[in-house]
Length: 476
View 1 (cartoon, rainbow, N blue to C red):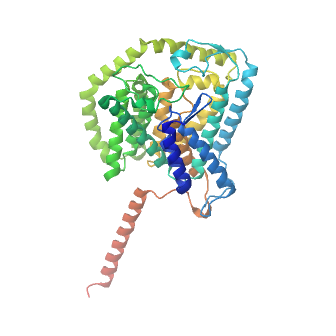
View 2 (cartoon, rainbow, N blue to C red):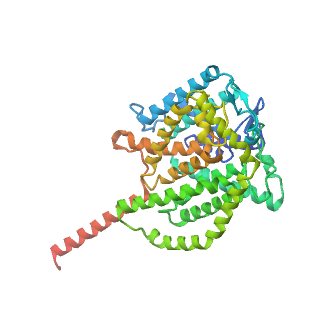
View 3 (cartoon, rainbow, N blue to C red):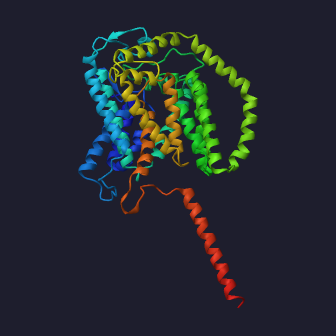
């Protein structure tokens, strides 16, 4: 067990003994160190996040055997269309991963067992079943279990808070690690670089940082998801919550700039376009101009005009440097091989953990094939649509879209905690829309803004009633 793992073991033990109903927040804290090992078993490092999912699976099984007395959840007729689709995806992926190594044996693939995407790019191996396939299947099943668990317990735990804790603590930790490294010149990375099979970018430029992550691009993807989440969560916040959202937004931006990763620079372009498009659609549907839009638009345009030359120069340098780097030269053949693998397997793929690519989209096409990508795409689009309907849950949708956008550019990691925590939070919103709770309970915690609006309406009605009564009685 690593030093970091020992700290998480104490945390897990405390929550299991005294705050079992809040264990999801342990999972949220564990997602902040996705590239570190909790324990190393036979040369394989298991991250704190997946240890927490194993414990969560045990808790879930225990709650099914002995449900809490105050559990209002009705265990009958709880299957939604997306739940059935998720089960189909799991079964399909399981059968494909177990069978593809026999059906398409010998197909040239880029092994996932080689540490480092750049190192793997130059090595092609014949397809065969390895422990990477078993590990990826186990991770996938654990993450699907997390999605169902969060949806089941969402009437007691807030998925929004869970994701906010994970993203906020993650970017704050990255800034702290970077500050310690630069100001104190202490090798704090030794605490986090503990997984034997992970590639750690220890020789990156002094102008680029990676925080507690293995590579700057991983930090950039994480920070981009946090930035999208916090920007969306700012609306409707007041007081200390607004200050916290602004602070975490600033820290996320600092992490993105400090990473110097083209991943975030490229991803922010379509994300900004989506944000503008969403604002236009809401404006057309409501025909109202919010105060923040009236005040914020001129200010934002002014700042954008002033900073545009610097931002354009920085973005151009990032993209140019990436195109001229050995990383890009090596990763290009990986993407070409992904298309080749897809064709040689007749669109089925070679199974999870068999082939490696430089981006999530191409990796998924080459591993779970067209049928799997279609099912996964329907799942993601449906839950993002559900979560984006209401302002209260919209930050989770933005976090998921932001991370998937980054991952589709250069972060080929289907086991990323951010991805699955965002999926779980969005699916919880989807399930609340499609499930009727007993006794008229929607399963939703009361929205503070709705409570304030309702209270205001009631007070106005009471005042109007008093004035009417006084007018009827006349002067005494």
